[in-house]
Image (tube, rainbow, N blue to C red; front, top):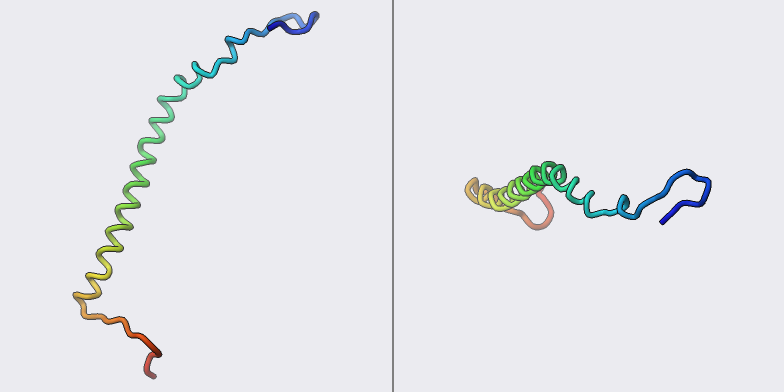
Length: 72
């Protein structure tokens, strides 16, 4: 592909390829994405652990859920 005459240059389609840029960005993406996924996994595990622990802890302390209006 050539630029219009008088522009003083040409543009090759090879310079617009996306394959080279994919390889160029794969290492930084893995370096940032890997730890980011670990943080998301850690937060999900903490949330699941809290959801499992809280009802058991309430049961161990003897707290009951009261239905209806509170007295007083």
